Amino acid sequence: MTSDAIERFPLPQAMRDAIVAHARREAPRECCGVIAGQGGSPVRLYPTRNVAEGNRLYEIDPAQLIDLEFRELPEQRTEIIAIYHSHPESPAYPSATDLALAFWPDAVYIICSLEHPEEPVLRGFRLRDDTVQEVILSA
Amino acid sequence: MSDDGKVIVLIPTPLRRFTGGEGRLTTAAGNIGELFDNLDTSYPGLGERLRDDSGEIRRFVNVFVNGRNVREGEGLRTPLSAGDEVGIIPAMAGGAAH
Image 1 (cartoon, helix red, strand yellow):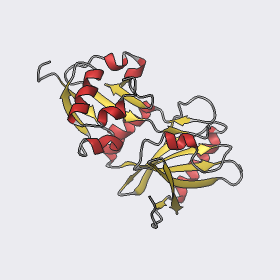
Image 2: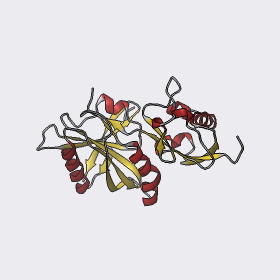
Image 3: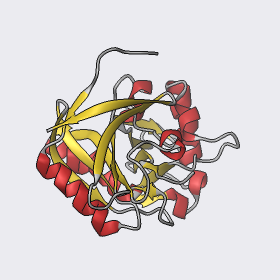
Image 4: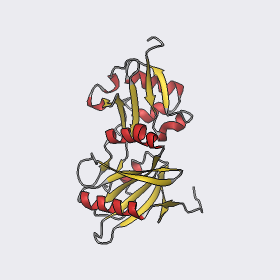
C-alpha cells in the first residue's frame, strides 16, 4: 500500500527535550514512555519504566500501562497518541524487533537515537501491517 | 454459572475494533480461560489476539485481575468472581535488538 500524503505529528519542543533527557538518563539502557493527547494533539508526556532485560530492548511496565490506559488517561480525557523509546547506539529507525512488536497501530512510534550522543535524532513512524511509514515530527 | 456472576472486562484501544468500539464489557466467566472463550464467541477474532498457538496467553499480552498480573499467578486458570475487573493490555515493546 502506498500513500502520497505525508503524515505529521506536532511534537512540542518541551516534549522533544524531555525525551532526549530521558534517553540520556537511561543510557546505556533504552528509555520508554507514552504521549497522551486529545484529537491528535499532545497534552502530556508520561515517562515509564522499562521492564525488559538488557540494553537493547524495551517493554513498558504493563502495570503502569494498564493504569494509564484504563484510569489516568480516561480521567484526563486523553488517549495514547504516541509511544517513544530510545536507541542508545543505533539509528532512529525501527528495528525488526520494533516492527514485530508493534501492537498499537493507532499510535505514532517515536525513536530517539543517541548514536551520536551530542546530536540526538528523533524520528516518528507508523508501524502497521509489517510496514514502516515515516511521520514527520513538526514543532 | 449464574447470570449475576458477571465480571467487568476492560478492552484496550487497539483491540476495540473487535468489540465495535466498546472499551468496557461485562460477561460471565469462572476463570480467565473461560473468559477468553466467551470473548472470542461474542467477538470473533479477539481470542486469536489473546492466545498463542498453544492456547496460552500471548507473551506480549498482559491480563490483570483487580490490578494483579495473572502471569505471576495462575494464568488462564485464575478464578474470577462476580464484580472482578479484568484488564487486558497488549505490550508496548521493541528495541534495537536484532
